Length: 190
Image (cartoon, rainbow, N blue to C red; front, side, top):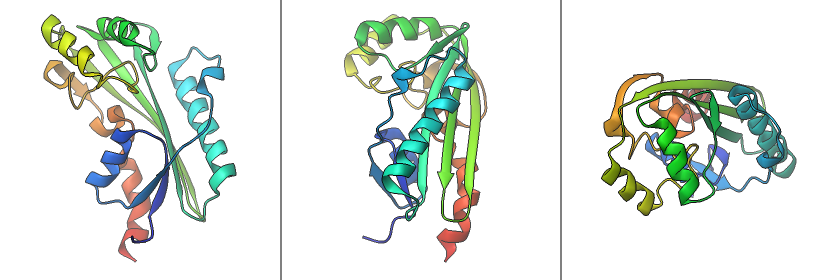
């Protein structure tokens, strides 16, 4: 295996797929930070503090010999912060809030190598049509919502319901790759 370009400190399969789809070599490592310990109600503050907590934990554990990439995502909808659903019932409630609503998906990421550190907080906004009941039931049964902020999957279940969008889809999927790529370009060409 070639030397990885970075260490993705996240168990997210979606973030890993974003990197693969852009031919970015990486190793994926667990990150141990208890974001449940944060007592913050502002979505922007929460996602920033969760990301920085994950970054600090990853930096202590792994260092930056292999550049680090850490990210976190939350959804703001109807004046509420939507995080990962703990069970099917909570996923159904989170999706009910999003049906026919406008929401913002916020992703914060930290990328650090031996010479620089990038901290980015990006937002992608969507307006959704009402979700169809049968499609919603099928999605809930699929368990594809597990591990997704707000149980939302803009690249999957939610995609046919998007009426309007502003921002990068990758941000909504959990990693704003468009903002990361310029910082990787010099190393990728060497």
